[in-house]
Every structure is written in C-alpha cells, then in structure tokens.
Length: 148
Image (tube, rainbow, N blue to C red; front, side, top):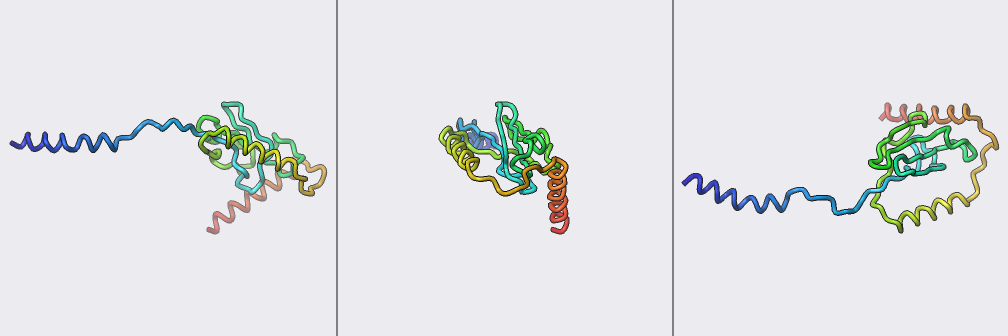
C-alpha cells in the first residue's frame, strides 16, 4: 500500500520536474567588447579583437602610445587576462548578445567619436606623467572606497 502511494506521487511529480529542468542555451551567443572607460574614468582609445584576445587601450592623452595603458580580456568569456593600466582595468569586458546590426552601429559610433576634435591637451605628454595621472586616479579611487 505504501509503495503504491509513493509510486503515484512520484509519477505525478516527474512531469512537473522535467518541465522545470534546466535547458540548453537558446542559441543566442554572447559577444564581449571593451568597457567604455576604465575604473579611473579614462575613456577607451584604440581597441581590437583578434578572436582570442580583446585589446582595450585607455590613454590619459589622445596622442599617447596605445600600449602604455591597456587591458587584455578573453574573447571567449570576457575575463581580464592582463592589467597594464595601473590597476584600473575593469574586472571583465562588457557583454551583449551578438548582432551584426549592433556591431555596425557601434562601429559607426566609434568612427563618429574619432572624427570629433580632440580635447585640448599638451602636444607631448610623457608616459611618466601619464602614469602619475593614472596612479593618482587609482589612489583617489581607493581612498573613496575606504571612506565608504
């Protein structure tokens, strides 16, 4: 008698559990891209994606060498692989659903931003000065976190 009740309960619960079971992804893939700015508030400069690594440069000055301050992210899952930005790299790349239309619109937005005149900065800013500026921003960020 007890086994029949257990069997009936199990038979009635199994269809409900199978309906709630985790399912495979819907086929929408996730694409990763550079965050618009680093944790110090410096805007995105040159960037690229070779399919394995996402390169994101965050220069303190528009004329600065793009390899002075940069972050590398994994193109497959968006995690930070290298921080060459004085500790100011965001922990992961920005994620979104892949869409060719969106990629085209982002490319147009970057081209439009590049066509705008650069802000007035000294013609030549040495990497040491830029590093000092980045370190100051990192120190201020840490101070603000400690006060909070």
